[in-house]
Image (cartoon, rainbow, N blue to C red; front, side, top):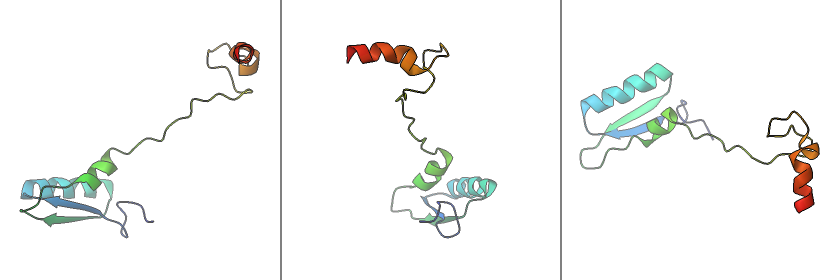
Amino acid sequence: MAKLGSEKRPIICRVQSDERAQYVAETCTANGWHYIIGFEFDKPEDISDLERMLNPVKAAVSSKVGRNDPCPCGSGKKYKKCCGASAELVA
């Protein structure tokens, strides 16, 4: 699937005023995104594609520590020789 904002998959926004359309157009042009703006006065405004591009979802970071990774406590030791050793005794 093409990336949002590309020529094959433009940002699609539904607005109700010229000012809002100008905002969408200026924002997309400044970032080099392709867009389509539609005026539909009988439907609610929808600029969710633009908001998604301006505020991308960040990937989740795994908090799992491997045995040979540096210990997150900051000691400089490997996890298995530091906090991981006491975790193994408990389990």
